[in-house]
Amino acid sequence: MPSVLIAGGGLAGLSAAAALGGTGFEVELFEARPFLGGRATSYELPGETVDNCQHILLRCCVNLLDFYERLGVRDRIRFYREFYFLEPGGRISVLRRGRLPAPFHFTESFLRMACLNRADKLGIVRALMAIRRERTRRKDLDRISMLDWLLQKRQTPRAIDRFWRQVLVSAVNEDLDHMAAIHGFHVFWLGFLARADSYEMGVPAVPLAELYTADAWQRLGSVRMHLRCPVERIEDSGFTVDGARRAADYYICALPFERLEAVGLPAPRFEHSPITGVHLWFDREVTTLPHATLLDRTMQWMFNKDRGRYLQLVVSASRDLTNLSRNEIIEIAVGDLRLYFPRVRDANLVKAHVIKEQRATFSAAPETESLRPAAQSGFPNVFLAGDWTRTGWPATMEGAVRSGYLAAEAVAKKAGDPARFLLPDIA
Ligand SMILES: Cc1cc2nc3c(=O)[nH]c(=O)nc-3n(C[C@H](O)[C@H](O)[C@H](O)COP(=O)(O)OP(=O)(O)OC[C@H]3O[C@@H](n4cnc5c(N)ncnc54)[C@H](O)[C@@H]3O)c2cc1C
Image (spheres, protein in one colour):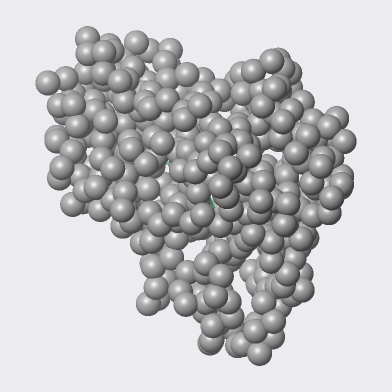
């Protein structure tokens, strides 16, 4: 069978390996670090395994779910049907689907949301209908920012802050004024309008690293993983690993874009956008909510990781936190939590951990989409994958898996096999 070497054991490289291994290719994957998963993985702390940051998906992430199915771990994703919008003071607004069909499935709960007033809601409904109309018609959605588009649609400041920003900054990892409108459209169309269940939020019930264990790979044919094996150079004649040449029929580079130059490939000039994860362990239960989006403050999302005592907080596009110390960030996090969860005032913080990912994703800024390369590199037998390639999605786990499947399809096609791995979007 044809052989393939893959550089990079993040979701892009892993999904390419799963697809090609599952159709009989001889696959070898080289990962620089001692574990798989790339940016979607877990760390060992003393007595604890923690994710670098909570990773969530939506039901419309069909390729990611297909990848989990291939690994036999799809049942480890727990889906939630409620979004909780929490105001300082503790008032909760719940968004969930009701009895009406899409795109009207949120009507009942949306009308009841206390964190928005009538004018905010009327504006949001008008804008959602405009997304349906304009998403295939407007040609400038990659050139204008989401904020400009929302202002064109006369959204109220509160609708922007408490609805659009709250959903989109975490979904796209960019501020509304830095985010190309095309990504905001994508998230709202697929996640909120196209199908009644597509918004359901999937949260891994196990640490991320447990999704890619060696057992899972047994079922995927001939896939060999080489950990702690950085690829030094990628050419059409082979990979250089530890000074030695490794040759195969085909090659996939599934490295982050900032690593391409180091292996001899041209790299696109994207900016990065950071994400900060804050892990807090309290001596008692401080909330019973499974998760919530936190309005009006610095911390954006809360995930209840263990009986209301271990909470994980996430701040996307977290440039404002870049220059703050660990202690300053913890102080802000605990201060914010006191406003939403009164029980935090009486609780003691037992342990805290901050992970700043300065290179979390590329910045989905206007004019970036057309710069994202497809799977074809300049070489006929070398293909590109990674969340930064042209996947049609923002930098997400779904985007990374799509890129892996697209690169795998390109390899299969070259090998004379018209295999299809990529599943189409739900709409
Ligand atoms: C903090 C944070 C929170 C996030 N939250 C979410 C979320 O909630 N939902 C969501 O969908 N997405 C989220 N994302 C984005 C998601 O994690 C990424 O889009 C996705 O994991 C990228 O996968 P990838 O395979 O393209 O790249 P990577 O995961 O970066 O994989 C590249 C791999 O290449 C390896 N490598 C580098 N150099 C070499 C070399 N020379 N040789 C061999 N290997 C090398 C790296 O070690 C890495 O394992 C988040 C990202 C971060 C950082």
